[in-house]
Length: 274
Figure 1 (spheres, rainbow, N blue to C red):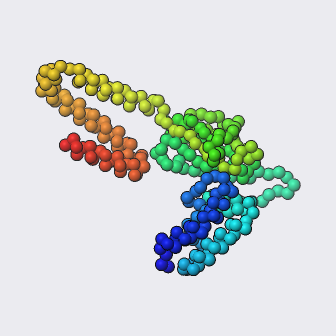
Figure 2 (cartoon, rainbow, N blue to C red):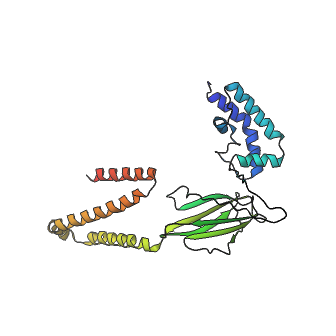
């Protein structure tokens, strides 16, 4: 269609007021991936896409006019649609009788292998919201739970009565009448001390060995270097094998990009040593 940077800059400038209006009505801060705040992001996914620059000019102008004429409730709905998926449930509701509709959702641990979990959870679209965060690996401990609004203020949510807060599972109960529409839940995952003790002992032994070598007299060091050459070679081979096993197990379960960086670091280190 012959679109270049000049056209994109013009469209972004035209939609800036509408974008700010959508951000302000939602009061959740800016979102660079929102298709309503950044209408240009939605164009490739539209069922009827514009075929030229003139069509996009018309689309941008009509979008800005529509946002400007919306009341706050409609503007908030549009802002939410650009950030979150809405669910429509097809069910049979009994007449003149209270009923409950339950909806469950499973989410992955984003930004793994980062030890910090952060999720945005909607608690205003239902009368009650139950959130359970669980670690499938029993060698992991969950702690430092924080529930904040988008202004960074702590939100007072209750720990559910039917699930306790344990080392590998945390359950929250939120009431839509006392909680904001969307909250940010964050916590930290850390390995249990039983998994860390072997590493601590190994670090202690290496530190003690280094301190001992520094304290030996110079003449004895030169003599020992000749007499203990075979033992030193065996020790270095054992340490190298230990590191190889540890790195292999770590890289097998690590993020691909992080693993590639780690392998590059190992290769550079070996090159410098040789």
